[in-house]
Length: 143
Image 1 (cartoon, rainbow, N blue to C red):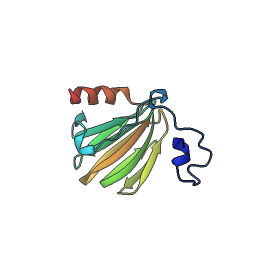
Image 2 (cartoon, helix red, strand yellow):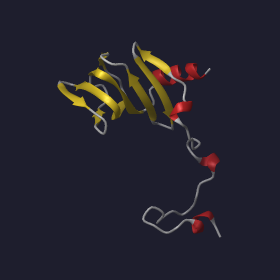
Image 3 (spheres, one colour):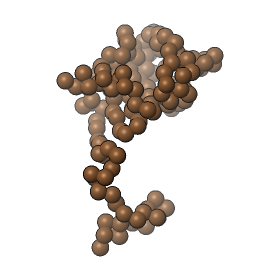
């Protein structure tokens, strides 16, 4: 019996023909706990913890209360999900206050900025491709 034969039939497994050998994958599977990820500073009052896959990067971003994040832009696509606190986010010319459960998408090269309110915030930001500047900071923090 092959590994595929052991998978329960469902809409998720239908059409799976084989389970690839780990050495043929684009990158190895990874499991992390946020508490075990190194913390690095990205800007005053802003700390991050990063996990990288192949072309995706996830960053848990903690921003202190009443902290501005100046307008900036990058070539990376960015999705963000609010986890804790509140964030006033400006994307292009639109401004919104985000709270836990809210999410946003920033197209590449579009200027955006933010500022936290009295409680600060934690956001999960996803980037593609990987932010090489953040990756370098995460690697340095892990040393």
